[in-house]
Length: 148
Image: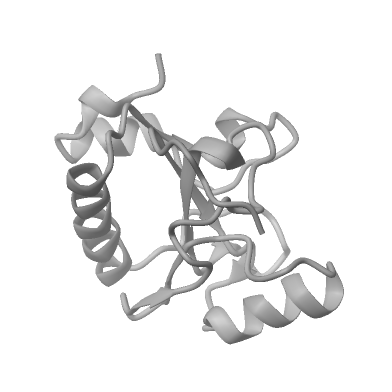
């Protein structure tokens, strides 16, 4: 793994799992390490369905989540994002939203964050994290971090 030199972006992801599947870091680690042969979980933080925040990859290291911005970003993964037909769906729960906002505020204070984006904003093949990130940022008084 490579140490990240710059941190000015936060990328929000989802696990692309149905609402009935409450997984955490260990299951994602299995997918990323065993299946993908990565060094570790690609994300830095995982937010479970109940709102519990789980640390994943060390924050000081580059993530493996969005190649265009891995070198400058911290990655957050919300568990959920698909419906029972494996279609993209905003099925996140209130405790997840509360934890997401608190984590974003913490990371903004910790780093020189300039923008917060959804995975789909740097990879047009994705709909992850299954919600409109700019709208959510505006609704949560974080509009100053919209991608410019």
